[in-house]
Image (spheres, helix red, strand yellow):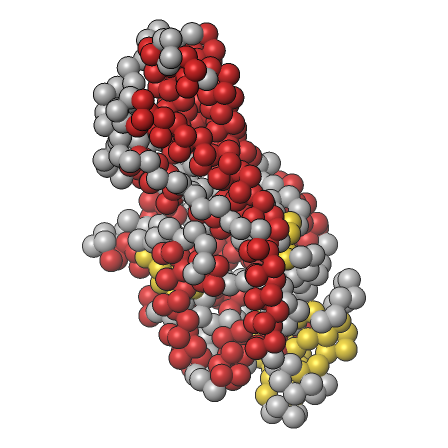
Length: 516
């Protein structure tokens, strides 16, 4: 698994100016923090690179030169916004104003966060410098442009062959292309970014929207080189069965369904284009965008200092904005943790393992012949394993989690209806059989929950008496082995006190005041 961070976006230079640092110092300052957060969430990479490597620059230069040779990157004189107060051309993120499409204000010079439309800063109504508030003037400058207009038909035909895309992604992309694609500048008047391989462009840099997406390809090449197999990247980019998925927010849809495919088409038509772009809508907070100044924000690192990572992973997966915007609230974090993770899932595991420890000397019971209901439960487990796998592969993550939690609900129903704490008084074998079947369902849970809840799934894997790492067992159900001695039961999850809501809302308010 390869990934990385884009280090040439204008937010980097904005932060650098605010903190009195160089852009590279900002990158270095925050990079380790990013890696630490990924690790705390249980997400690891074979390579986590940046777009600041020589490897990335070389790949970008190669693609740029090829596009120029193919007539798809051409020089044009263009009008740009220039601030006489700031004495500089203003990159898109340095400009804000009123969106020409939906009248939202403030809209950024590269894209409107309200309607999601990318734009040129010149399209903004009432533009102003974010640095000084100055109303910029228009000046001319020469730049290279990507001829999206020349690839319009090819792009539309390709999009029409992607029926598996989410409806919102297809609808947005088709509509955007049918309105007519305009050529877009791929160089800009700044000194931070990937250089342009031309002597007369030494004072310009590649536009970040152009070179950042190339990072998918350059990271693959870097990974292959580090493995000592420099051509291994080709398996993923030329292989007929290889599929590329881009998990993004809806504001990045056009960059991954139009611009990146256009670059690949213009560079090498044999390269695999994105197979799927499962873009999410927005995750808001208390009815608005995440915003420190408006007391609606919580950092992942801050969250993980007080709560378990699987608590966050579960909540995000359960409320993922796959088809519409959703809302983060501390009330829902507490409710879902206590009612679903603790009450439905965690308590099931703890009471079954505790009962086995007290009544069966901590050993997995030997089952007798299963009754009809118990046979049905085995089928439920096997079906859930298949369904969750399919739902995840189709990017329906909320449905997959819902199906997985359904296994816990069925296990609770079976346990309550067969009541082994009662039947053990008269028929120990019958009680043991019930417990074995419930253990089978619980073992299913550790597998189907592993993509969502890796920490508690590994813990459950150990509590069920299995010694190897869960991630190495494959997508299958580990059948409980009669006679296996189980470790002492431990709670899978921690219940949250209702006071968490008030405490966290107060903390957001305090953080907001301190950031002003």
